[in-house]
Length: 175
Image (tube, rainbow, N blue to C red; front, side, top):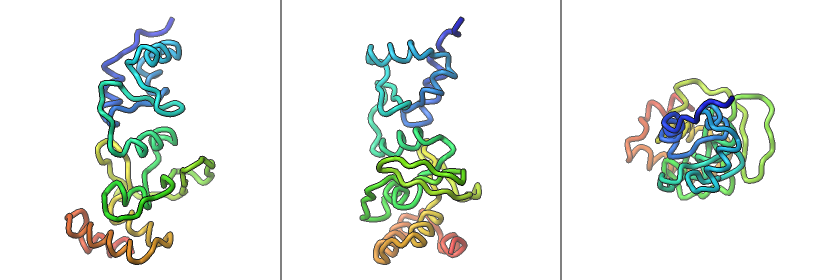
């Protein structure tokens, strides 16, 4: 017998993730696949991508593409590189792909997603509005190492310092 669905538990997952949740999280909250599907049909949930949903009462997030991509790859992954720059609004660069660091050595190819495999120290990751993203200092170090245009890196550093998102010492420690 399936447990009774716990809407409060599902809401807690979604609230921490800008209204988004995974099918696995719904299942943990007691939602059968049939109940999940019926909730989509009734308009309570919106199916955003394969295995990723949003509670319909939550407003759309300005970075929803980052949220549902991050959740579809796995909540242990981290938004990084040019995607993190865009999230922090530190550059005019508009990435054509979403950059994500995953905590394993083998990557899976996905359209419009650039997966990077790296080990991140705990102090190189932060949670911003429910989204796991590399810190500003790590982000700038990653884009510099990946060959982003020098003028965009300089812009990101200027913006980060002006917005007080990072200190010079933090930038130097990542170099």
